Length: 102
Image (cartoon, rainbow, N blue to C red; front, side, top):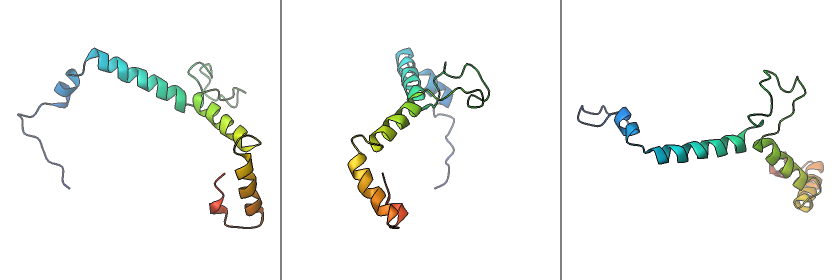
């Protein structure tokens, strides 16, 4: 499909943005903060402004890191371990590695 130009009578992007209420902007900012905490490997305070946190021995402490650690714990002997063990045994027997979903 082709991009269609709007005529001058259509409201501009700026006009549409100006119609957004302060409450809606606050709600969106709250959602962004929640998502950034959840999907970041480091918390905002976590790396103290270091340009190279891993080199400086500052390890990830954000929500994404915590989620990965939790999932790995479930695989390595936790609630998912029985299924993972079955899949791992199948992989060791040279089955298709793409079927290894654990």
